[in-house]
Image 1: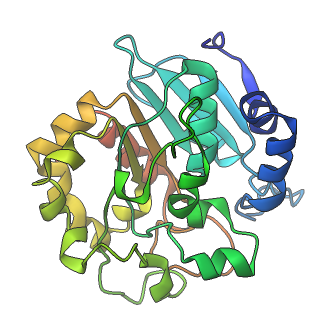
Image 2: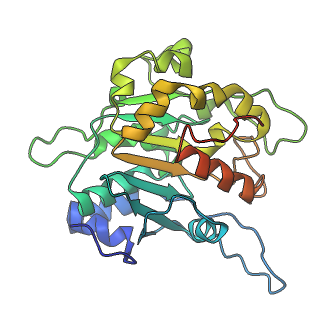
Amino acid sequence: MVPPLGTVSDIRDVAREVLGEEAAARYEQRIHRWTGPEDVVGEAGAKPYEGRQLTFQECPWQDTLRLADLDRVLRGTVQVMRGPGGQTDYVLRDHHMLDVVLYHYRTAQALPSALFHADRHSDWCKDSYLEARIPQQAATWWRLLEGLKRPGSGAPVLTEQDVHFTTAAASRTGSMSGRDVGASVRVPWFLEPAQLQWSHLVEQPQALASDWVSLDLDFFQPAPQLRVSRGLLRDARFQGMLAQARVRVFVLSPQFTNGGDRIEPWEVQGSVPSSLRLLNLLRHLPGRARLRP
């Protein structure tokens, strides 16, 4: 059942309730979660964001989020908002989609049938990568989703084909952070580069029928990145799908919103107020905002 407003849940407890003790222990051992940005805040030298994203908080539905809301998300608490029409918005710092699936199943008894995934990084990997190391959930969840099984049938919650992915990358400029790594946009064998363009995806009825949508803010930031992706935001078919989706996942990815795949130091890049404005726009498309960098 849906927890009361204000309830804070530890995802490790949720996993035990959904998966059982033994399976939850394996889940925690075999999949790692990122630590947060290592920004030093204040004269005392505190690092308030470096903890892992482990808690989900039930929050009132808000049309407009504030900087204080994003600060809680940056500190590792997922903000969960349930709308009067049955839509649920999740605001994450790190792209931990398996955790979202477990939490939503525990609280709403519902699972996705298809996912629309817009991101500058694919969050997919080869089997050889999984065999060689303990994967980071944020960077491999698309491949790992098949490991979550539906109760009763034992079928995957989502197969690789049930995830409809679009990506694009702006040409690097001197003001962007980090460096690019080609492996960050690897995709399953059945996808061709042309199929990853948003203009192709919005022509596919099965993609537009997705009941879950995941939007990573690094797909739209910084300004050069918005220039290659803003057509998606202007597309009426995408706007309609986003308005009708039962679950919408918005991911800040604060280390990556100024470009780059490898970021050193591991700190917030770009502008948090800009991310807030973008987030509020995405939640209410088409809105009145002008989509220009």
